[in-house]
View 1: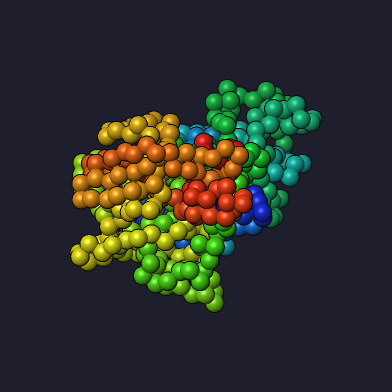
View 2 (view 1 turned 60 degrees about the vertical axis):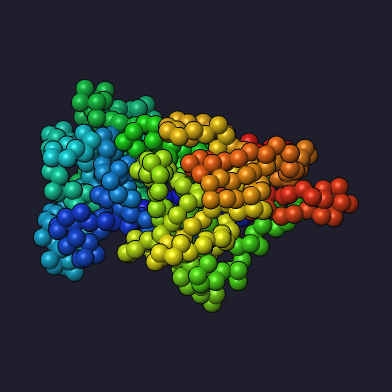
Length: 478
């Protein structure tokens, strides 16, 4: 059943289709949930945190998109049944199953449609569904039953979401208006035995007033959620936040990035380039740019595994503190190696990594400073100012600069301009800017570069080719 969750990071269509994702692991918040988790019983709703990374070369393993809310107090995602969705419940469920988990793994189910969103202290109102006789997986609201409340402390009773499609009643004879066709892949194999069937009355063809109110938009199927569009920074409708302006913080990248012309930047990320003790930039799931950092702990070439620990930003100024509080990325500053289980990450490939970075130890234990140094190329937020809102970041433009000089109080940069007719070739423009220390949040992320010499018969000597995967969309059009 579809109870495992993964957060999509990138979708690459060429040269071969591959989906990069991060598993979401259940994070118990009370004794009952901890006992349930320790018994390795299935969990489909509650709080979830980032786990290991993975890749998929086809979509068969995915069932449907899920609505989630990013927690404001922790690095977790909350997933609970929503109004209009269809869920399977564990039949005969009891929280005490966790004390004898091995004898409670042969599950039976009942199916409900959610009538109200989950609220703390109230729980969820659900309406029982029954199978319609003569159809493979067509269900309707039970005429004999009434909605009932599933209390908050019974939330583990929910087994999994079942994708559905609401019928209009005009598809063929015998299908009532408002009936729901459920995804057979999310139901038991023995449908006829698992669910009692009913024959709908003729009067039910038009449906009841309650039916219309309860029939929500339903869950989008995986295929419907990922239309064949070559777009970057696409915010999935299945990801929500508690603040509408913050919803765009959670981004799935679905894009086709153009290839570089002269230098193969993927060579930077070959497994043999990874060494224990290095700090690497990792593509973030906030804006797709390499502004997450991790310290490499172990490299296993035989099994193609890289183990690392996250570097968490140590905010020094008021603006950095505000950005961290709002879950914004901070591209440069002071960072500390994350502690505890949550800090560990394991990768089975190197596609999530961008490039190694110069991280200087500060002298304090497990603490590093990552600051732009002369020769680096960085993307900076154009017209940035302290206090930028979520909408400012959403609509921001970027400038590309080369670092010229760095002092304790400021950094001097030179603007870069794109060379016409090339995908990602840039030249120095001549304009020089000074960025003071209190403006360091202006730096978004470092961009890997290659110095051109004899390419195009030497016509591009002195120019720079930048890694397309680190460039904002506006710079990638030729």
